[in-house]
Amino acid sequence: MRCPKCGCEESKVVDSRPSENNDAIRRRRECVKCGFRFTTYERREERPLLVVKKDGHREAFERQKLMRGLMTATVKRDVPIETLEGLIDSIESELRDSGITEVPSQELGSMVLKRLVKIDKVAYVRFASVYRDFKDVDEFSEELRSLNNES
Image 1 (cartoon, helix red, strand yellow):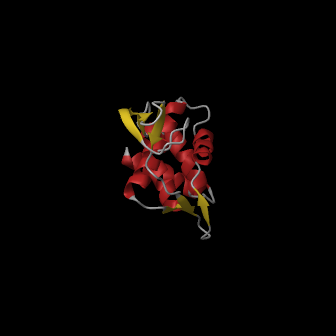
Image 2 (cartoon, one colour; image 1 turned 120 degrees about the vertical axis):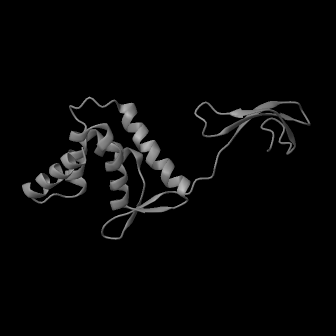
């Protein structure tokens, strides 16, 4: 690591600890030449997650896009934003930990539904109606029946 003050390429680690949100290692370093102290962060290299759509095209996974869908499904429901963020965090962690770089949109939707049904059943049905693209009332009714049978 190059010293930001003198440019020397040698430094020693004085202190090392996890960052506040545990997504990196925070290291305090000291330049061996000039003694200047500076902080560096070491993070896991993350490859981009891609979502494979029904028509086969790929797009980058966007937390904000998923959050918008969840916010729409939970409108006028008593679901805290922190709960939705936790849901997205758990999905993203599961995908990254599995080592895959591409996930079909159907699988991503299923992951959301699996978690959402435990949080709010009305939001589950709302999200499912868009995700599964219900064409008529019968499909909607069938989903409600299956939800009731699982309870």
